[in-house]
Length: 283
Length: 77
Image (cartoon, rainbow over all chains, first blue to last red; front, side, top):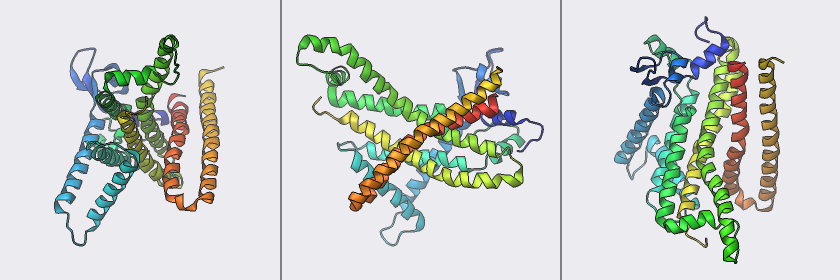
């Protein structure tokens, strides 16, 4: 625990508050929030500068790194970095080939981007919880949350983008009629046209719920796992300094599994949803 | 009863019930995985990936509940 004057719950709340930029409702000025209450009062028209900044920064690192390797790629004996990049790309490629059985050039690059980007964002979780916020505190910035995936805005943003892409491809591949039929003529169906009409609202309700549950669970799963992990790291940081390693080291080692697994699951589910959007089968 | 006492009970329920469900789920999953690889050892790599995907899906719910429970216990109560 870095600053002695805070109590435990203040410390936790401080570490879970984003650096928020928004319009102050009291005087109508656009500024950074100085307290958690101020950040909350800003409401909808506020932006979490730290989440956005770290996410975009890590995305740029990913693009720069991979494009640098791609430009320097040699057919001779590859170096360590090129090997690593090739392994990641082949891994994603084989996974997408296994799950995605249609023709679309967008899916594999998107899966690669999602996987590596989320992996990098999740990896920020392994940076000790006090280092970066303390550094920014010294330079006068009150709040700094460095793991973008512990911000539901980021994860829900990504899952909603996937959702809208899935809707777009559904309508593009099945037509509006096909997509509407998928939503209304399943799972209950009948030969009799009258019963079919009666079943439409029931089917629409069931399918609608399952359609809307997908992006929500997709985004919240990633958020929840990382948030819980970050929360436990913060709690461990409340212990006296000499005792922290007994808990933080095992948790960090276990968390490496969670980090990679959640990035992978997000990627796989994304590809699965895209695959479902391309199914023009017997519906 | 005080409201902070209720928060502790809520945290205990969240963690306990979440762990219960996940334990049953993961136990089932691991058992079936063992059966599967005992029958067809050549499928181990494929089954392992699939198992880890489902493991991550099952694991997510109790993890989330543990996180929220800790938040309730240490930051709210």
